[in-house]
Image 1 (cartoon, helix red, strand yellow):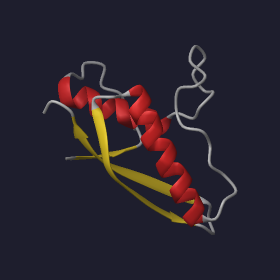
Image 2 (cartoon, helix red, strand yellow; image 1 turned 180 degrees about the vertical axis):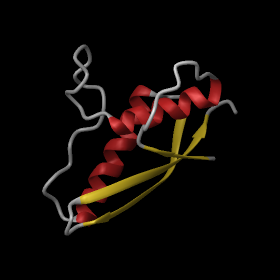
Image 3 (cartoon, rainbow, N blue to C red; image 1 turned 45 degrees about the vertical axis):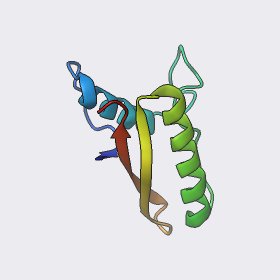
Image 4 (cartoon, rainbow, N blue to C red; image 1 turned 30 degrees about the horizontal axis):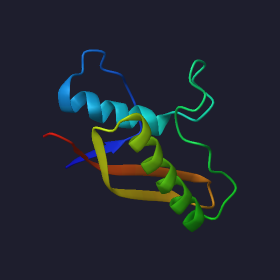
Length: 100
């Protein structure tokens, strides 16, 4: 199992497991409607919600997006931490890769 956070940098030569993990990170980093040729790619924004509701909505959207756009990855767990007063949250996803 691997831990993945939102994308920080791109490895254009990634292959195999690293490619799958990078794709999951890219999905987590992309807001729906931001990709010009694929407006449905990414995760719909979750804003103006209490943190417990935000966690549930974001988790469901991450799982749905990864299932749709990167079927080689399986989400095992999602950990969301944040500060509701500051309006900040970070997500870490535990991922296993099919066929590994």
